[in-house]
Image (cartoon, rainbow, N blue to C red; front, side, top):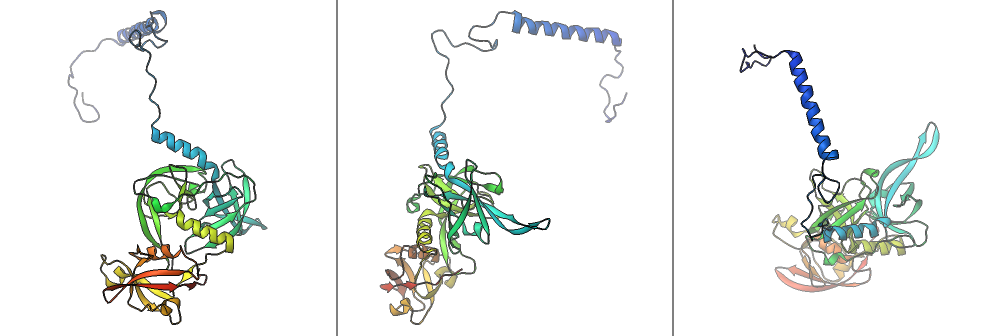
Length: 378
């Protein structure tokens, strides 16, 4: 006979036994099998060493081996998470809206934040709270606080919030200038707006990634990590295995996997201090228009910051800087591109003297500039 799939039976003429004999034989096999299982598991003699009849006991005089302990790295991660997560918060933002004709607040979006002091100061991203009429912070133990905006800075994408509370859990701030590529880091936050208090693990993939503020000459360096960062993680802390915050997660590269960016904590500390004291960042002003030398020449190997224009009457003009000069160092620390120049300038305040190393006509020289104060730029 032919099967429906087109294959022919290998023995088409084999005779079959009556159906009732096959049924009796099958039933007998099932009963015998069940009896054997019963004798082994219930009625038979158990092996020494436990209730499991298939468990082989250890040799005489030896103890049963215990399971291996967790790896030291895993214990370190667990300990850090236990200490840090109580200070990681969800930041929910609301704007005025209507619901069946009633004026209500509707959710605009959400992000993450970190409590950096016991009296309730919180660092997050500026783009998280931008345009919000009401901000509600949710802690790891599900307490809600309405937060006030102390200050915000669009150029660094940082904001400082304040909630009312005493002896709140907080995270210590580390030092991003000593970071090394390959260090293990943890990213904590509120991905997708509802997976609250999530932690992911990765490494520092690179340092000093240049990120430019939108429609501005300002640029700053960021930390690159492969720890999972998703929408909603913005504003959450990037943490080392010492339990210190070494960055604030800000963005990920769209269309790529495992490329997240965090604002270095040294930048965060300067900005948060200014926002707490003055409500804005007090930046020193040189009075120059700049671009990366590599962008000016078209040669990616060229390093330094090219001065395209010096504003008349500016601190740079008073110090003798000229269009065409190339800044190569600040206080004798190398500057390869504009983000490193702006990082260095955050170490100064208006009125401070800054020592610049420049190239002019292929000759290196040192110039001291007494800085002015930059106007607030949004």
